[in-house]
Length: 314
Image (cartoon, rainbow, N blue to C red; front, side, top):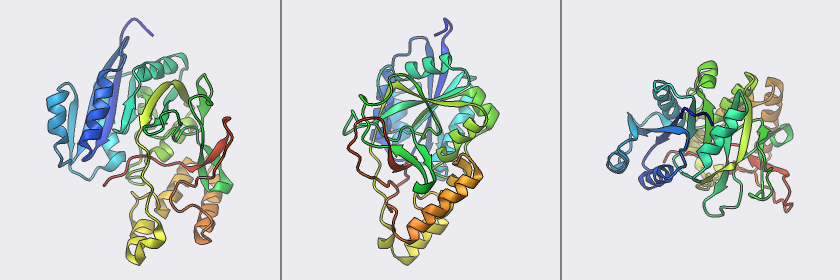
């Protein structure tokens, strides 16, 4: 690390998850900030549960930006990033508010970025309820699976010991150089109200930013809720989910955009979407959006979970 403190802006949108948000901020208050200058920005998108008031009382140094309740994850993050850039940081940590940080997590991520020029760094995501298990890390593109797929049944003992390259970093916890944001822009909130991370780091990779996972940077996450089964929603709700609601994990337009924008090439994106659509029509895919296939191998094998962001608005 350099002698001069490295400024890191931490940005997260929140909505009516006061206890979870406060838990995250408590973990950040115990972070090892040696050599770092850390500032937190919370974008409170219309919370009605007293989130902002509790933050002001318990964490007065946190900057709060009020939203109108219509920002959702992607634009909420964009609002925070715009504010972060005004503080002239070297790095911006974009995250969800359901993260609990190991004390050295941010320091390890910054050290990794400092040692590897033009790098965007993701943490090793682990689950709250099974804290040795890896979560949503190191997806790989698989046309015959219909898109991105994750490792499954991986643990802190089976992942590589040194930082490794990936093709996509999910948006739970990503350290992005401010230079990268200025170069490639913000997330696309028009196409992705919720899942803006689906194309953001692949866009950076196409602009010659390498994507790394730092295994020493451990962050613990809330497990994802299982989305509802489409067939049980009825025609009206099913149409809304599949066609009109871009913020839903099942939305077919969102899925196409993610394939089109996030695939290694546009041709591969179209091919993967065709596979996904065929599987959906023939009911051969996992409707819950996760696509688990049991894998008993303990080594770092690639598995079967479609990539998606953890934040869901309620």
